[in-house]
Length: 113
Image 1 (cartoon, rainbow, N blue to C red):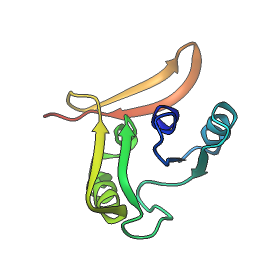
Image 2 (cartoon, rainbow, N blue to C red; image 1 turned 90 degrees about the vertical axis):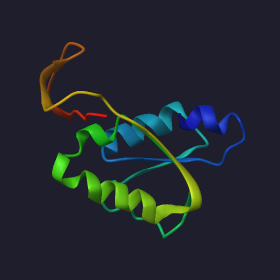
Image 3 (cartoon, helix red, strand yellow; image 1 turned 180 degrees about the vertical axis):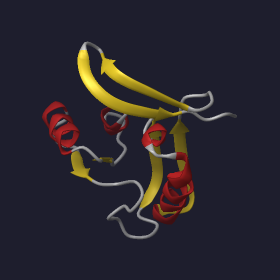
Image 4 (cartoon, one colour; image 1 turned 180 degrees about the horizontal axis):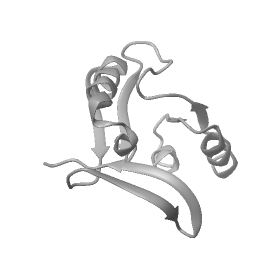
């Protein structure tokens, strides 16, 4: 999403919890700033962003912490800013031990509408 928006003239940055994902994003997208960060406590000043795109990131936050993440998004969004949030619909938690042929340990928290 960062590249798509940047190619259309939007000033963007990317934040990911995983340092390896930040490194990979930087390799694939020279010229776009990517940093390591936690959506539960962003190292960003209040009202820093005009918009946030969070595609399938909140699915990795345990249900009891989702409100913390949403409050943090609100804190860093300017008044009238936009939040584009995507998540998986369903109930409960889905655990994966294998993903695309790799051994993993990933929990996905599903949301009902």
